[in-house]
View 1 (cartoon, each protein chain N blue to C red):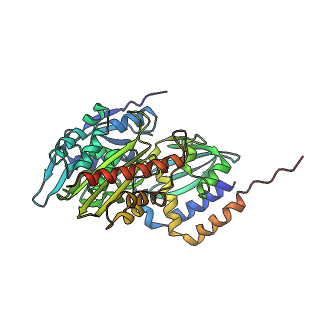
View 2 (view 1 turned 135 degrees about the horizontal axis):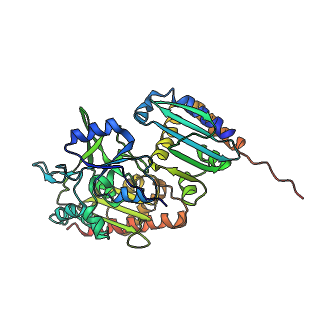
View 3 (view 1 turned 180 degrees about the vertical axis):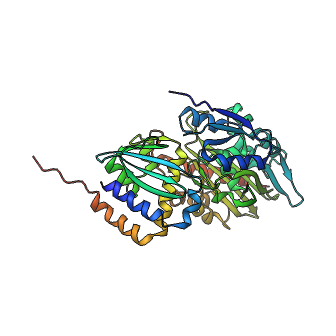
Length: 291
Length: 136
């Protein structure tokens, strides 16, 4: 098999320069930051006619900022390790992110993989997008003369197909820091430590007395074309008294939210069963984290 | 001929659906379809217009190789494309993003023309029905 070798490898000098290059050269140019997805695609000859890679790691997009309204802005080239260090400063409120990034077990991927790259790859197997969607994140993208903000849950169209138009670049992810009565959890099932998840579940919820509020349940992994909110599960949990029978009953609704399929890694029935089990565990763990 | 006809209908409506034009912006591609049981054909997308041609394209960006009945099952929603792909029932060579863009375009065009495609999807099981084998 012939490995992918770019004809040209350049560093972008500014975001404006980057968007102009992408608009002029289109599909023959691809952005590279951490390089984990590009490497995978190149290895499997999935880069089509890409000839030039534009490295964006020298752009000032590696940052985490918290404003006065507790909105956190994460730059596109922020690595998972940087995000983990930040999340660990808020161990309860950002427990979901801590769980998620710790679950990415190859240390090399944690150290070079970027938040923007994991989102723009638009692959349901990736863990960080599921967690950010559970945190109700938004993405900021720019192209010449235009900037827009869109909810992350509307950003994924299909495998490798994010809602990015021609020449458009994702620059930042934003989410509000959850309050003191909110926490979350993330779990996934994988067949080995470097495999992509068969199923993954991210939960974020608020505890209001003995009731559950603002519940967000997001499922990913090998369950379909994109990371998806399990709305039937959320509706069954919302406002209800937290308790094992309620959670177990609600988790069963995931079969109405996603249609899993059979392949050599597992049957549809197994995936649906795993989703049910992991949703139950994540909700229970998130609740246990809130005093 | 069934798949080629189905894609010809799709291309006709794709060119008459301005709501999906933003997905075609800058996407100049040639998609080759080698379907076992039909003559090869290709779709060329250029300057936000699509055209269907017969034969093998000189330098396709994406090549889909599949048994024709399976491809027909996929485009008429009778077969799960992801499940079939993962189980190696058909092959796609090229950028996976191009393949999924073509799929999403197909779904959106169907959504914007529900009467035409609704009727086609209803008729699909009859059109794709395999003749029963005679008992020995």
